[in-house]
Image (cartoon, rainbow, N blue to C red; front, side, top):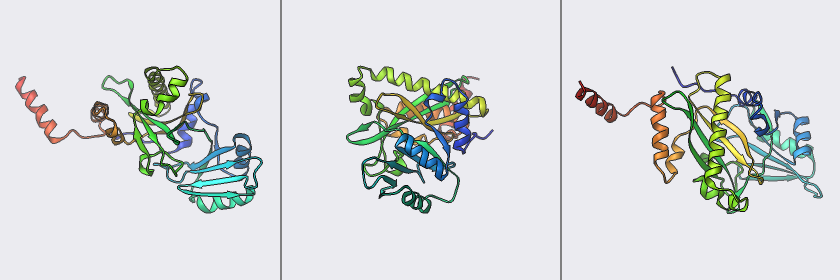
Length: 270
């Protein structure tokens, strides 16, 4: 059976909102239109608009509204930043930039920073050989200095969670171990919720933002996550476990060398 993939951000968001444990960790997300953008900017001051179907942060646009400024609205797409004195001027520019496909509007979360660069986390969760969901990897993604998304494919820098959270956790008198446990449990809870709605899932990658109160927010869930980013961690055992589980449920084929070695072991036991 092929690995199941759910491309619609809406479908995955609805599954998370159905969980009483998780809905409070999902940013306010609504269909994209002019009135929604206006009201959400007034409410939150900053929002993201993103394609309903999309990967690698492509097409994501950040909008801001400030008070007490002649240039009251801002728009950033990639490295391009623009300021506007009116909402209508900003929205007209947005329509010219966004792709001709369905979009959604999402409450902006002010990400924590490391060396003045925003970061978030990718939490990898997989079905283990015992048929249970298990968080198998957590990696930080440090955004490119001039971009709004943290994705590696958009110039982000993968780093260990402990490196990015060290000063923030010290200020809150919390340990990296306890915070890792919190993110690991969140990963399993998200996978369980999605697995109930979409049977057949074997792996997910959760993009998690952390705000200044250290609250984790579920920004997005990917059902065909890139495992190779975990090769960037100093601890290579994380990737080895991810690959081992992926081979077990059929995403990757076992190498010819490993298959031959397994056959030799089996022959020796006869």
